[in-house]
Amino acid sequence: MYKFVTIYRLVDDIDLLEEFFSTIHLQLAERLPGLQKREVSRVTHKPGGQASRFHLMFELYFNSEKAFQEAMNSEVGAQLVQALMPWTEAKIITWYFAESFEEEIAPA
View 1 (cartoon, rainbow, N blue to C red):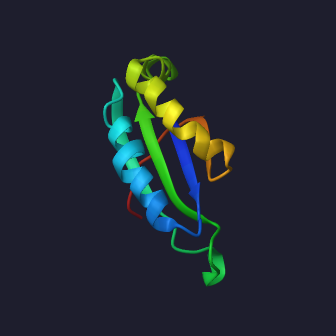
View 2: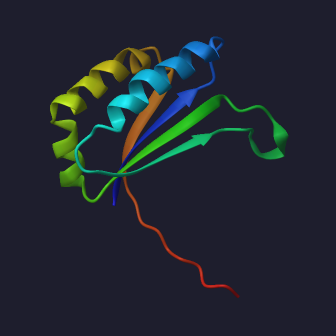
């Protein structure tokens, strides 16, 4: 699989960040053609219980890099990138793309 990962940093106005995520980022992402799975992780803390500088990680899964590229070249993909750019430029979010695989672990 191929995935698009967005990591949100912790900010002072967490309500504004959450509003953007739930009303824009999430809504656009769910409309991407070829999207197979989405995963939201809310960061609780770093090892040792220390506060993290990150708030949320959002992962979008596609069957292949080609399927991902097709999604991002769609109208909704362009809208998503356009919506994310100001947050990226302000260094509030970081994004990356990755090859992904899963392995089932057999019980011992």
